[in-house]
Amino acid sequence: MKIVEDLVLRVQNNFSFMNIQEQQYLDLLQKILDTWADRNDRTGVGTRSIFGHQMRFDLSKGFPLLTSKKVFLRAIIHELIWFISWDTNIRYLVQNDVKIWNEWAFAKYLKKTGKDTEIPRYTPEWDEEMSIFIESIKNDESFANEWGDLGPVYGKQWRAWETKKGNVIDQMQNVINTLANDPYSRRNLISGWNVWEIEELIKDKDTAPPPCHTLFQFYVADGKLSCQLYQRSADVFLGVPFNIASYALLTMMIAQVSGLQLGEFVHTFWDVHIYHNHFDQVREQLTRTPRPFPTMQIDPTVKDLFVFKYEDFTLEGYDPYAPIRAPIAV
Image (cartoon, rainbow, N blue to C red):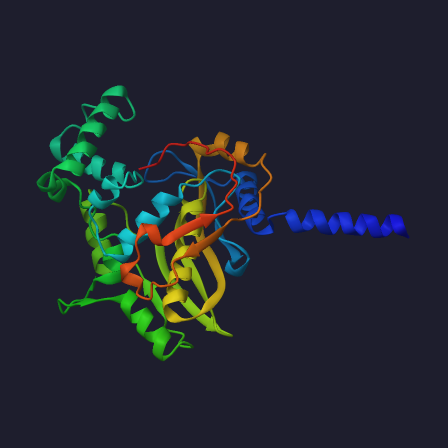
């Protein structure tokens, strides 16, 4: 009997240390690898994908920043602040050494100046030209105004959705108002898919692609705030770890300013894929056992969503494996 009790205790202890929430992400990677549904895509790289998947993260049990590879939290926080401020120019990000949107602006610059056919991507010449471009964005305001804007990306849609009447709608402010006045509303959502502007983006081809995060909805029950993101297209190796942490953090911020406790972040995918040039990196990540999630401390004195600063966030107990590098498909 004592042997059985010891075995049960050992299993319970091991289970308590397992990061079940992160394991579902690793299971998704494996599932995609195993499907063999290879498809061509607009980048020319090609993907292996599945259609339709969902993950759930209990935000009361830790901040879902993946541990099976180090995730660049500083970029996530600055990008989220950038979105909320409805900025669409990369200059703020560049000035804070956040590089995740650089290639979109740089690709537009090369094409408009005719250099895209002269400088092969990821060559030493390309790297040098990129460095000059980013320094100019950082230090030359007029250059940044001309070349740093990405078009109507997330922050623009969240905070300044244009209507056919010529006015704009601040969807984020509407969410805050509705949570205060009608928290059980089933209309408490934000859309990034402005059909008219999507058509303009597709026609132009020189701006960032249409929003991958199509819409997200908030849900209140038992005094807890949950958020569900509907993502039409998901780069599961590079993008999704950022997306999980970003929307989890946004939910925490809105919960704080709304006086609510934390519920879940629910991540619903449509086309979720691994790029063909990420297979080796994915297989390396799958050899790692996830560690416990860290915790995120937010300055409790901040009660206005639109005044958060980078310094208002403190991550505690993050113990990730080393980062795994991979190229971005643009």
